[in-house]
Image 1 (cartoon, rainbow, N blue to C red):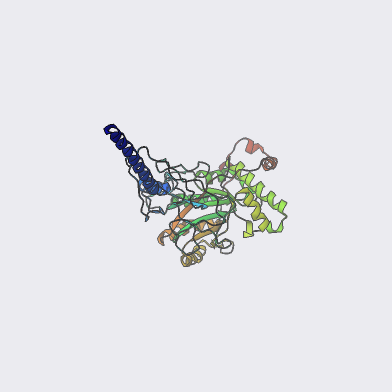
Image 2 (image 1 turned 90 degrees about the vertical axis):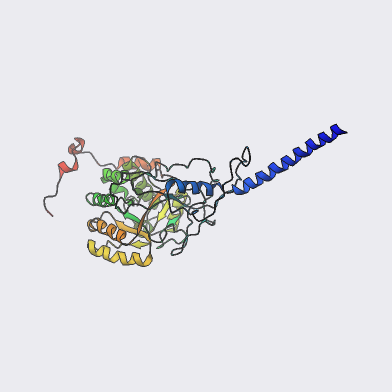
Length: 411
């Protein structure tokens, strides 16, 4: 009898212990049900970022000694979002780690504050499961983010935030034509430049941006990229984002779908050839004309479309001071925005230093956008661009630089 009682007690203790472990595991799963929150909070503490969307959310971290071994995290798919934060220090320094899925700021309607957690929408791209809370943060893709030279100006305007965009399905940005996605917070500005690269003017823009440690997005015309590939490489190597703007800036609304595809793909191939590798998956339509069938084609190619929030109208206002004087009140009234300028225009290039000074004086912050995945060209168009290369001359074959071939003697 006594032996049976002892055996029964042992069995009872075993059952009670198993139940206790189950309850402990359930508690652990509950506290770790969103590993991305823990990951984002850890990243914020490590980087000193003040832009984390989870900064005001309570994060419960279970003790590592609560259960041994710890259970696997609950498999839970976070809400999808085409934009992610890369919060970090000023331009030219190492970017901080990519925030965890689900911990990024959501897209909010223009003029409204973004909630702390993105809500899934029918157009969202399915997201991968959140990383483990203890896993190291993934580094930005070298193809989409370049550090550029270090910032040596302690008073520079700089870059306050880097936003990574998943271009699956060709999301559109810029309230002039697209209302669904808005990744900008109040007081934030994205600088974009069209129609380059161009001799003289694009280097002027690059110099002004470098002095303030600012990064921008350049939408290059393919034909111009074949004229001045070395200038476009300078844009990329300085850490700026390079997208495409067709081959020859034709209004795609006036072309057949096949002709429009040729304009797009030939432009992409030319930019890739100039850069020596894939470009950012961003595109801007010439004249901001968006034929629906061409928009659908970009969806097949997973290319993000950029319109604008504020057009500088620098094709009309040809005085640098007047250009900035007319643009700033509009920006102040709106409070934020994607700005459209042209680095091919001489007066715009001259206006950039003044514009950056006004942005800094009025408390605006610069956001740099990068693509999650690079865009590659199609082989058929690579061959087409190779056939269209400029014919070599004796001077070019001898490797004579521009400064030895021409110079300005009057202006």
